[in-house]
Image (tube, rainbow, N blue to C red; front, side, top):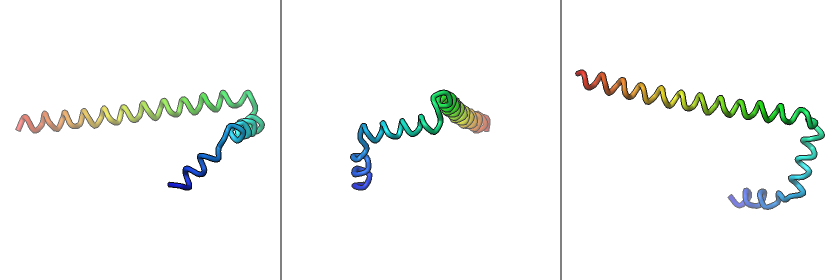
Length: 71
């Protein structure tokens, strides 16, 4: 746990600026919005799939309860 605090404590504004500059150099200014759009779309799909899965589980529980009530 202490190692985590030490690592996070060492990341300052200059280190973040260097990381951002490296990302800009590697990918370029035009490619970054496309990457972020893809990342956002992936997160949206993940949330949708998670909600669909939760809805399916709720429906299964309701169906099981209906079957038990009929008995």
